[in-house]
Amino acid sequence: MALFLMTDPAHYEVCYQINPWMRPTTWREDRDACLAGAKAASGALRAALKAIGAQVETVEAARGLPDLVFPANAAVVLDGRVLLARFRHPERQGEEAIFRSAFCKLKTRGVIDEIVDLPEDLFHEGAGDAIWDQGRQLFWAGYGPRSSKGALAVLKDVFGREVVPLELASERYYHLDTCFCPLTGGEVLYYPPAFTEAALAEIRARVPEELRIEATDADAEAFCVNAVNVGRTIVMAKAPPALRARLEARGYDVREVDLAPFILSGGAAYCMTLRLDRTSQPAAASIAAE
Image (cartoon, rainbow, N blue to C red):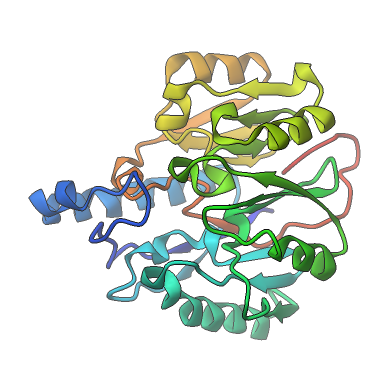
């Protein structure tokens, strides 16, 4: 059973700008309505995950840390081992102690086994920039806007798995999870303009053309690449009909959630969750990337 970490959105707001998507002015125009919408959206995402059989652990909200609602950036988790994140922007650095405390509690309960710290001279923003591909038995690792390239060696050392470096080409797609999503059938949904030519060459070398699903501008701007895939189900933000049709034609059950309040801050379904039960044990009969 899939197990996810989410955060109570009680203190979520868009009050600063550290990526091009963030719209503090829009938030300030009607704070109460925006917060009510965010609480409803978070609840809808939680319900969508539970509807497909997943369990959800919750981190309490903390005033003054609005991006705590994006726990994908908190850590990389595989085989019960947790590599804690170190945030580049001061606005998010206060999250580190909150997430450390949450993981310590999970360790006490036996949900995770080990917590590892990143060296102090490096930045790495968790599963947002290190996406485990179960079928290929490797990490796709973004770097540039938020995560240090040097952190990729730490990732390989901690987890003992191949790490494929993917340099991100735009502040607009500042984490890998905004533009890259491996799927359980072996496909990869990705947005080519977000990557350097060298990164695109890495993707094309490892993913056959028939398994590469190129997102359009509209797909990426709707934050649909920032999706959660469990089995044959994909949970994502409201999708352009053409993308939904493309995924359904490949046998996926697409479940959409209105995540507009979080897209105002540059995040959606994947950003709002962190999967805690990922394992490197190969899937029985597929090249899955669950």
